[in-house]
Amino acid sequence: ISERFRAVINEIKQRSPTVVMLQEVIEQHVSVLMDCLSRSYRVFLGDTQAPYFNVLLMLSTEGSPVELMGGGKERVSQLDQVLQRMYSGSSCALFGGDTNLRDKEYAQRSPKYPVQDVWEVCGEAPATRYTWDMSQNTNLRESAPSNKARLRFDRLLLRGEDKIVPVSFELIGKEKLLSCDMFPSDHWGVLATFQIN
Image 1 (cartoon, rainbow, N blue to C red):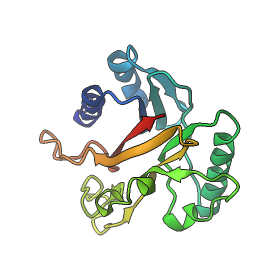
Image 2 (cartoon, rainbow, N blue to C red; image 1 turned 180 degrees about the horizontal axis):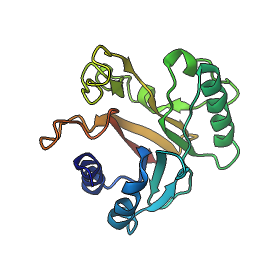
Image 3 (cartoon, rainbow, N blue to C red; image 1 turned 90 degrees about the horizontal axis):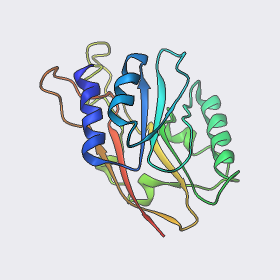
């Protein structure tokens, strides 16, 4: 397996989070993922027929992987569908991952389904704002040397009714791997902790 994917697996094993949301997983990594983590996590695979897909790892709750794609209007429409789904079940729901949403698109979401943005609830720290930061992450430098875009594509949205309270929000995977001089991903990982009431 690639050194980058091995670093992701090791990060998961070291931290043992309750929920892990992976994006852009390729078919070659599924067997390694299952061998290393399926004893601890329920593994939900996205569309494995696609060139890459999302994977959701959960210790004991239910969910399914979703990815928002397409242009701005399409992403906003897809987000509204996700928010509606968050309100269709229990009083608690967590959505997270690479939304591809720009801040102005996120602001256009339907007000019918209010949710908490975990980064905002945890204080909107400037150091953790950009999960796709080409000014610091050099993984795509070769293919797009002048791209210095800084965006918050990766979001955690919560409907918790005070039962789930965000406590912290941090970015991980910001250390280059010495063996390949790359980061584990072109996105920083998001690690959030919650208090369950």
